Image 1: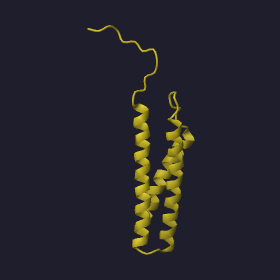
Image 2: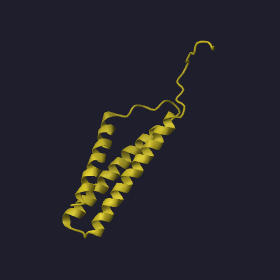
Image 3: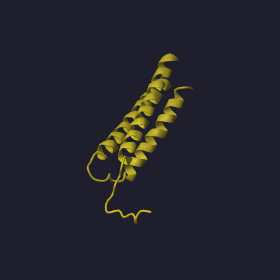
Image 4: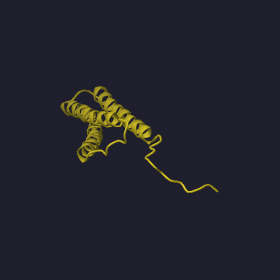
Length: 108
């Protein structure tokens, strides 16, 4: 058998690339939800509540897009990526939940 395995430095492999792709997939999913909410509001007529729900959905989508963009560009550095700040994590989670709530509101 081989000798003992020693590690002298961090070898991230493809982990940063997988994380970047996961952020891009999540952003794409949020984009689809925002577009479907907009389509739903157009299809069933533009009521005051429907227009408000679509506007809030687009605002939540933009908030998530900003957080995702900052995270993806922050991972492009040569060194190991910094941990996501609690503020950014909370913003991403709040935008995701808000987008789901506002998109569901356009259905009613």
